[in-house]
Image (tube, rainbow, N blue to C red; front, side, top):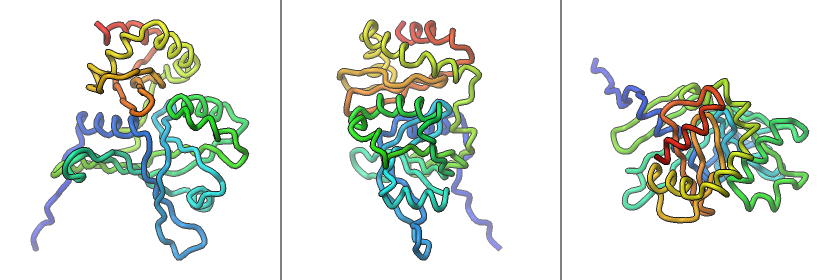
Length: 247
């Protein structure tokens, strides 16, 4: 009896970083759910992606949509992130995250935080974010499959995608003021983060998110993720780290 060839590579720090960047820099993705009131067929739609402070992806959806009704009936979902570039689409990395969906109550602290982060990332969502039929779901990762290109397949755990830091809550509280300060007073540094560290094209880059593991940057059309070498463990580390990244 012949052994099956193992197509998976050992998950290393490089694979973990690629997976985190793919997820955290995604503007949108394909959401797969189980269609309600059917014979169990999968149903796939495109959704805008936000990221909560712990690294969990979030989506803003209408209760009128099929995928929302599906999540209310069955919490299981998969989210595909990663955009094809030039040439063969299968040569470009992509990440499939298997999740459990959790509706975010409108009157919760989590909703306030997630709404602010989502709208900075997707400004056009201001037009409908407060409509009564719209709401947020957190997609709590359970496991993930990373395809980094031909011959580069990895399995990741929920912990591989998580932002775990004792500074997370404090950074969330200071996030808005820190972003306003950096964008208004340190535009050169922000542009440096995008064009040098993230190799983004020239543009009017702004910080739209700060968490313990990195920065989210946008020029209005594109998103880029700058992952720190190590997660911040104390909010006092943020200022010297941002200064070092510009040095």
